Length: 486
Image (cartoon, rainbow, N blue to C red; front, side):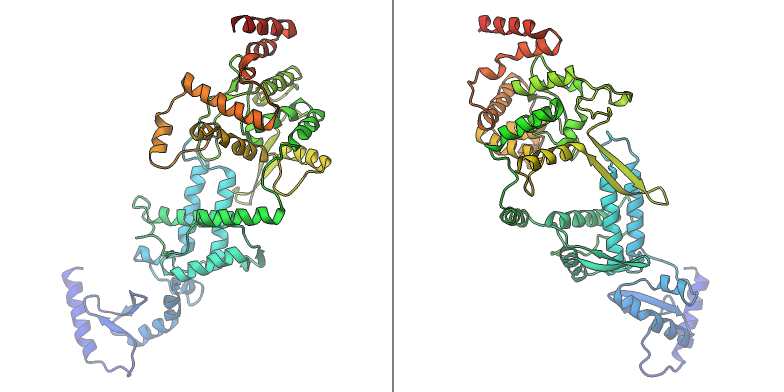
């Protein structure tokens, strides 16, 4: 403030002392700024220069409800009386301004290369966009971001859990109740938006949103209880019964070598349908009998040694012998392809009018084919699908009592303290490989037929010879060499 402005404000304050205003005038005078103001929700709000107290009172009357409710009245003024207020502080940012800036940042992450550590997939981006859209419909676009209280966030979380009807655009939209995992996703995205906006490098908010103690992710105990209730309601856990596995294997053989091999991989290596769809021939080492395939669900988790059963290798050899022709060069190295030469799992993104992803359609032919098999066998139940093989592997592998090796085979990150350091400093040597074989052998004994410990690696060179195209004679010669060497 210059010296002339300061003298002018002092004269305005002195002149104001001579003015008589009605009793009960709600505003005070800020002497250094020579403005009418009032503290609302702990913040000083200004309503014009001295000495026009009538105009200041009119502005106050038109805006006090918005300030008290935590809304920014400058947007209402633009749409109504034509008066525009200037934002002078980050405290005045609306929830819509923060949300739109956050979505722009997420969109930039989506454009990063797929192998970049901060790359955001289309499915995650669409889920984030859906979460933000519902939040804006609930609170309103004019609401001040820092004016939303912990009680407001608690009420919003209750609406997420129980469902609500909101006005979206020109129509009402019914949001059904979400599961506990769905609530977790909403809370994670909104808290991520708050951390992003309050980051000093972004500097959209002076501090994070006021969530309080009750707007948090569901605890592990709540998730366990929810899972127990689901199991109780559907009458079964997400687990293949041991007596059903031979029936499923026999049925899978009738649907071709590829389906049979994929189900064995789900039991042998805890593969999901996505893992099967992106498996390439270069990831398989037939000579040593293992697969090297990273898991990409939550960042890249290396799994450089996934031992294979003899049955799994035999089916993979049959798949290679009956390889389907592929016109598209980018799919030529895939192990599993449909009759059209396409991957078994594909994702298709639909964009809105602005070219922004609005919905991601996942076409999973593996799960569809497996659903038909289970339904034909009469053992299809809620929660029992192709992904159940991964749960079955983990449940059976736990009996090996080598949890570190089991987590490695599953591709699970170790996030707590020393376990995270162990993941970083542990490497695959011969002793580690033998531990992997013990785990895989233990799963084999529990789910398949009882065999001797030496049977798992005994036919390894014979199977590798068949994979290389040597035929049954080469396989028999290799097996005889193994027997003599043993």
